[in-house]
Image (cartoon, rainbow, N blue to C red):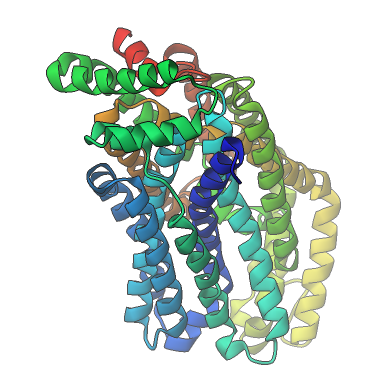
Length: 509
């Protein structure tokens, strides 16, 4: 690992592992949440607060993560992220009560929030301009990889410990400590960001690391690069206008890319995919397969996005993603409208099948539409399930093409997100801010992302009760039309532009 490209790749992979644990942590809880609720006898409110503890920690970490990143350096903060992940994993696995469990999850959430600030920022600052997109985008790839590995990990642990379900959930959460520990030890091998060192008076050390990143630079080239970084910092401190002009545009760009990222519906659709597909007739037994399929599509197309980001550019990928969003969401909205009645019949049949034990015990719980087929005389759990199965088979004959179309559209939506916003967001935010505000700017973009993620995740079930699926998907599609207009009118291309030149370019707009 003596040559610079290998060393640079190793540094980027190490930093991007924070994204892997981020993705792992977000999804691993899904395999444990039902057992946790029954173990501690939680009410709906208590369960919701416990499950959302990590998400609120993420918001806190994203809001306040920029300050220590700018003050103490990128490397120290990256190391602390690993420690937070490790403490969270161990604390969650051994928690004796719901209070300590929620606190442990909150600590892990802080690590996630800070990682979305520090990790993309560090990678962007150590990367040559022509490779910055691919290397910084590895953070997003590792998030998606973490989602997939967590899904598989939960399934494997559940299979191995099928006879000991009382402790299986603790293993699901505790196993995260292993990648957290590996990541933390790898962080010791990271250098500090050369730009942070130079901006903080450590010129010689910053120059040395900058030379390792750019081995083809002559001494004159290296000196010119260091001088450019110093001059950018001097301009910012000596002329507030030079600093403010690019900052105010960067703030707007960071806010809007995070805003549109969530208003595509990505977190809601990912989080509630089984429920959405269940509305079209997919049975709960098919949920694991569909969830794995969605995660695989996300992973594959994230790789495609990383392959293209330094070739086509950030703006081009946002165009492609926006068009894919609009097409998939619009067709999905149409499918829910066109197959409304058979979808409703299939959903009712699935609900009847799930409620068979309750109905067999109390026929007053039977939905009115099934009363001709089930009476007091023929009431039994087996008969209720048989009627439900027959009704579901009939409904699927009418809705089969529609439910398949909705699944295809959701997969298309995930692919569009992975190639577009998913590949671009963390790269783009890490590139556009002046040096003295880079941590603050990354924090703003990350906080915006997580605040809207929390709001959307909370509001989506309420929206499902108040509006039709056609209206909801139509709204998301409309927001992506607005995103397309925003990309056209406002978003600059950052491909191949040095961070210092980016500051100058934004200052002229």
